[in-house]
Length: 219
Image (cartoon, rainbow, N blue to C red):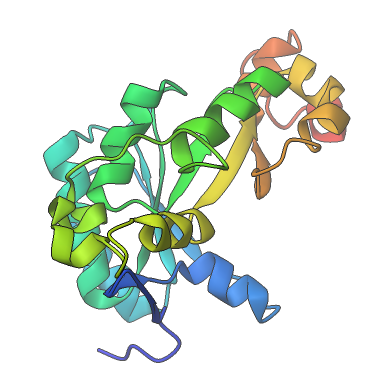
């Protein structure tokens, strides 16, 4: 299996953190190729790497992903050099941390409609001072092993800063109200990308089941 062009690692607190393929390639002015995964399958993850994809996005909002499924997906992806991003079912911090602690390096926040929603996404996914992400003992933080996560001075700032740098945050705008407030949403620090949901957008515009309607496409 070729791993040419796969994400490298960065050193933080004496340990290696996988670089996020999306941010690494963006820094070089390159696009990233990703694939939605709607059901757990480590074999599909391996096949995506063989096919030349750079990241896999698991759909936790509509797919059957439990904590074990998320962890196994991250383990398989890391083994073949893929970055894992996810769309969780909500913006609740206690939901998002389940994904982050497993090793997910990108979160697509669903149903972001207001500035408050976008800010809540950032707070939950970034360590301080950029956010309020909870420190845990999952695999993303080397199971809280002091020898792995502490700097020489006993602090843990390096690994927290590196985790923030490699975290990609996407706000998914799925209502007319969200699009109407796009200027304010784009001013929120910490949001890297914006996406939309054509089906839910159509429904919010009074056009249920018509995502290809010209009015929806125009919006």
